[in-house]
Length: 429
Image 1: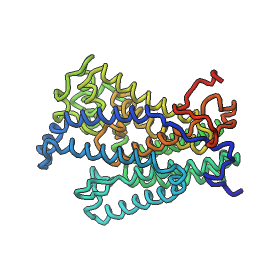
Image 2: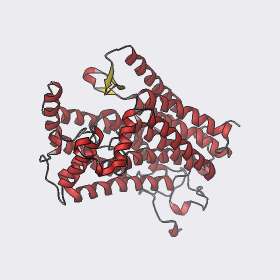
Image 3: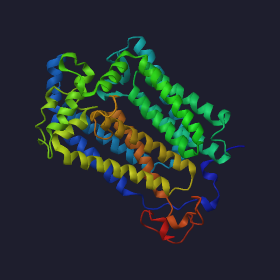
Image 4: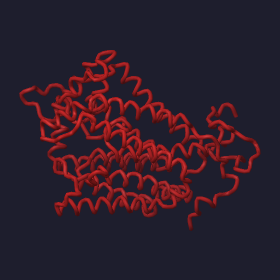
C-alpha cells in the first residue's frame, strides 16, 4: 500500500491552524536565561582553570560570549522551525538523517587521518573543529534526523497496523538505530548521546502502539546491548564500579569518577537552602570537573540552593507536561510521534543529568538541556522544541476528540474562530 503524503489526509482531519502554546516558548526562555546567568557567573573561573592547566589564553568573558552566540543561534533555530511548515520539514526527513550519518562518517575518517578539523578530546572525536565558527557535533544532526524519519516511517506502519511486524517495522528500525548507535557510541564513544537517541526511538515505538511483550523484549535487548557497550570500555566499567561503591569510596582510593560525583554532592550540599549566591561558587574554581557542561546542575545547587534547584526542576517538569498536552490534543499519529520523540529526547537529558549529579545513576556525560555550555546541542534541542511549538497550532479542543482520539468535524474551513490554545479537560465535552 502506498503511503499517502502529509497533504492528502481526508478533509475532516485537516485541523484549522490557531494560536500556538506560548508557554512552551516561555519555559524554554526561562531555562536558557538561567543557563546564561550561570555561565556568566562561572565562566571566568573556568577560563582561569583552563589557562593554568593547559596554558590556554581564554579571556574572562570567553565562555559567556560563546554561550550568548549559541543562545542567539538557538533562538533563530527555534523561530525558523516554528515557521517553516512541518510538512516541508517532514518531507526532507530522510535527507536530514543521511546528512547526519554522512557527517559522522566523515568525522571518523578525518580523525583517523589526523586532520585538524576533527576535534579529539580524551581519545574520542565528537566534533568538527570549524575554527572561528566554533564546533559542530554531527550526533545532534543524527538525533534530529532520526526523530523526523521515524515519525514518517512509524506513522505509516501504525496506519497499516504493522507496528509489531518484524519484517515491516521492527527490523528496519533496529537497523537504522543500530547504525546510528555504531557511530555515536562505538566510534565516537559517546554513551550519553546514545542513551538519548535510544530514548527517542523507544518513546516513539511505544507511542506508535508497540505490543507490551515486544516492548519487554526490546527493553531486555537494550539492557544487553548497553551492558556490552559498558563492559567493552574500561572507563565505563570504572564508572559503574564507582557508582556501586557509593559513598564508601575513601579518599585514598578515589578515582577520577568518584572524585567527580563526590564534588558534585559537595557543591549541592554547600548550597544549603538558599545558596551561596551568584559568583560565590567554590567548586567552580577548579574542584568540580566539567563545571560548565555535565556538572552545571551541581553548580546551580551551590549557587541557588535547594529552593533554586526545586524551582528549576519545576520549570523542566512544566515544559515536559506542556509537551504531553500538545501530544494529547493532536489528531495525526505522525504528529503525535514527533512530539513523543522530542519528549523522550528532552526528558532523557533532564532525568539522566540530574540523577547523575545526585548519585542516583552512574555518570553518563549527558548535558542539562538549554543550560549546559555548548552550541550544537542547544541549537538542535531548541529546533526540536520549535517543532513542538509549531505543532501546538494544530491541536484540537477536547470536545472535538472522540474517545478514540480522532477528530470529529473541526477543520480549516470552520467559520468559528478560536484564538486561544485549545487545551481543555475532556470532561467539558
